Amino acid sequence: MSYYLFRGKYSNAALKSLVDNPEDREKAAGEMIAALGGKLHHLFFAFGEDDVIALIEAPSDEVMATCALVVGASGTMSAGSTTKLMTQDEAMAAMKAAGAARAAYRPVGG
Image (cartoon, rainbow, N blue to C red; front, side, top):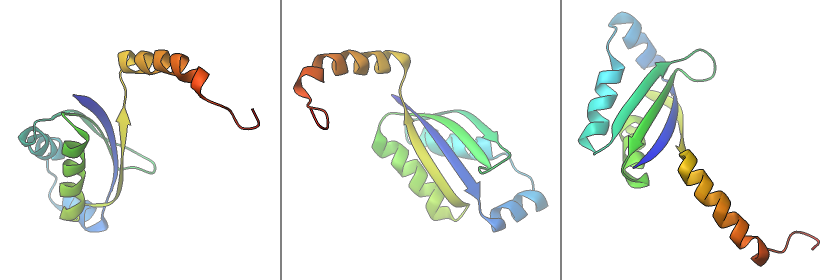
């Protein structure tokens, strides 16, 4: 499974609803992600550009896209982004592959 960082901004209507009737959004998000075969590791409320930051583990990019589409289509978020993350082992494998592929690359002006 892969890891993803989701960052989102609540819509004005969603923020009003959360103030009027506070609810556990971690539970709601976790249930939807689990139904698709993934796992919500953490959901944080944040100050700054984003209202929510979540660390999600999903079996595929398609599942993560499905999660983002469900949330986006609900009108809950006014903006959001998803970043695919790599484990240290995956990064090390990429570094080794880059070392091997370096000979096949011609840099600009080279």
